[in-house]
Image (cartoon, rainbow, N blue to C red; front, top):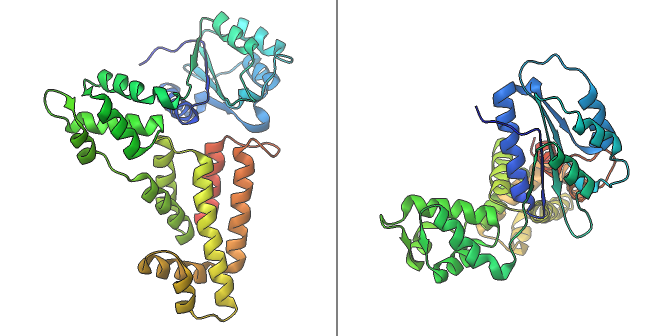
Length: 324
């Protein structure tokens, strides 16, 4: 069983990596203490006072207790006093982990940094690599996997699969499995062992939502997020697909022939047939509700609305409502 520190603060602007670390920590926590030993604070519950109050409560749960707190990038130093006091007297069988998805306007407060460090905890920054530093970063990550990646091969990999660090790491892992015994990776190996699959998978997500295939939509969403795709981009493509379907459904309601609608859709013939069939099946009213759901999801992804959940929780709930 892994050992846990009293407190963690994981912050930075690499939101995909932060989501990955949160999921991994929660999995380890549930493995160690069961689901009943893990308490999650998100939305309106994720306040310093709420977390401090929970830390001060006695618990009869067996094993280690875990508290996972999202959205601390919205906190300010003012109002941290109860939490700082609670962390100072933290029970030795308790671990609390704070997650901050930062940007230029929202940062985890310095007082939280200091409070976590004072417990003997760990503060980790997960920041995106600057574009001009990315090839060097890729070469370094490849070396950790036992690969010798030439700089031109690193640039080819970035051009091939994009600049998402999580996706680049996944592709490097695939390269490690298929690389020559000596570990030297050339441009040809990058072309052969990696795929330009991200855009196709994003369309697969949009099609699964429109087609009402909940299981495929949820699985594809989780896979895309784990490889570093950002939620705003996924929202854009889902909204675009649903908007086109809504326009097709409106045209069908007004008596326009399917063949005429198909000619105006800029997509392969079979894909156009499927979209028109899905639009007819769902109907204009349901598609209008789906577009409203996507608009609400975009608001939630920006931290809007009372009691807004974390962006991944909001994304999964919205996809389940639309596809289900």
